[in-house]
Image (cartoon, rainbow, N blue to C red):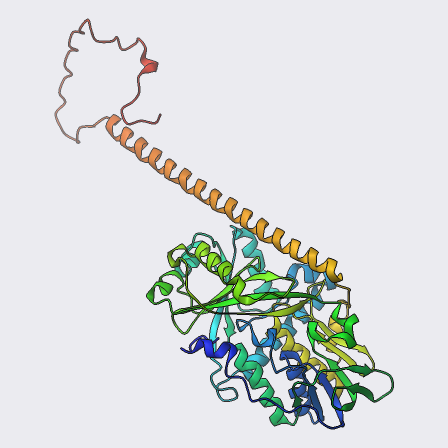
Length: 495
């Protein structure tokens, strides 16, 4: 899943670290982290670096779900649009939250280096494109991001977008030159290794059976041993399970599926000439080129788990729709994972009660927001940093259970349909405007020709004046110049 490696498939579902031990004996630590995904491992690494004793309990394996199955794009922002964020918390707090998201990006950048995580496949640049023509809206958003939120961005006009993405389905774009891509699976396992080096202990195949939150020292029961800790960090997202069902129910599980194509040769560069990642403004498609001639594409979403292979046809059709020249591309591998989506669109970061912390609900911005969560929680426990309170307005809200899943699926279908209809209308308007411009150009050319033919030629200065000839006698079959003149057309003139 790298931007440069030729063995992109190996970076997706292979190359995992060796199996780590189960928790086999009782243990007493300062901090227990439940869940060995991006957030949990970041908490563990940062807390261990600050001197705490840390244990991570993972019910399966490191990064087995969404944390190890994504496209690896790192850029600032949240699932909640910036305008809605300002409306919810006010301009000043929105700026502080956005600054935290930039900190998250820089944390990943500093960690995802070849020195710390070999083979990370770092590459820069991300492009957010619009499915409709929104040039005026784009200008306002660019000004807000650059001037008010200190984010380096560039506005791309339609021609520039289509020079690198050869499809008529995209219009304007916002380019983030400092955003970047990494091999997501290598990153999550690299985080685990870095946390271990810092002193954290990670136990795989160790599900949590029950948790007793009472008292200063919390008690956790696993199938093979017990653990006591002063602080518990719940970083299991939608997979916390029965012991923490009430917390899991505040997240809507959304499975997002992606495909890695077979090598496509030179035809891919003729269709996609942008080296970074591309997302559309409606959140439907997310793709990038890996290994030079393969396409990594995420599109289908469901609110129920499905076999990824069943959705390969949907990805093929989507790619062919966006880039007809590629046609039906061969798929080498399909994969997917469940992300937790909150009702308000913001991550859950903070303290639920004394000594009990939550880090989940990162949605599609998991890399930068999980980095935020890891740093804030570790520093709050050990340093008293209280910036996590910026997320307090976004409370735990029940996601609706089965009804919420059905509603979420229907809303997703409606959003896709609305986006498709808006795109069709935008392309129709674009075609109509182009047709009108061509018509006006033809009329202007015809008027110019008519004016040239009808112009009176003036003699050059100093030339002898020639007396005009007497008019020739009019024939009987020739129409009189003052009869039916309105019905005559000027040759070459407008209709």
